[in-house]
Image 1 (spheres, rainbow, N blue to C red):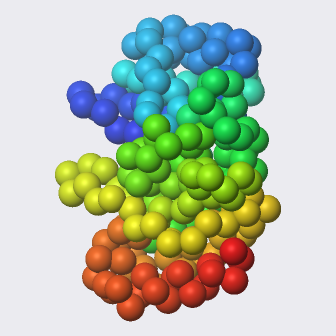
Image 2 (tube, rainbow, N blue to C red; image 1 turned 135 degrees about the vertical axis):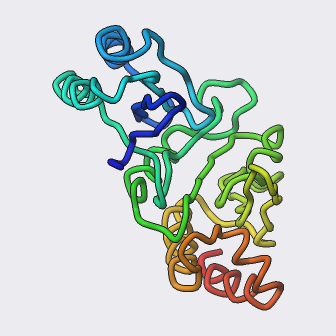
Length: 223
């Protein structure tokens, strides 16, 4: 199945539309609505990762929907064993946010979105301690370090779903300039050690403290 197309009940499909880390232009919203009206069930739903899904597309209209979405300039994807759309809280504009979350999320999205991985790999960027729980529910969660301006905590191996797991804290803060490289190293570590179909959290559970310490060692020099 093509990336960005999800089977649904009743032999229908959804087309997952990806924006700019949760931000969509008015033109993109109008385009998604048009595809939904012409080819789908007449509705567009929002996902927890800041993407849109044009759902209830009949199998016989799927090719038409994909072609129309392409003509209208929509981007689709964010499924399968890949790095999923990077998500960010509203810290860029929220009065509680202490840095530009959307700018960092865009950097990470441009660097890693769609990169193959043993299984899905989720990155989240959050702007204040209120989002600690969300940061610990990502394969890589990024959160400002309290009392350390311009430095960030990373949590690794978090996941939700049927077997939720809180991400492990690295134990040291990193400067913003090192975050893209740090995420790249975490992803490379995961691809090197993870088995097909194995989430990062499962890998860290299986490997225990020694494996987590190996990952920390690969990142500590960036601090």
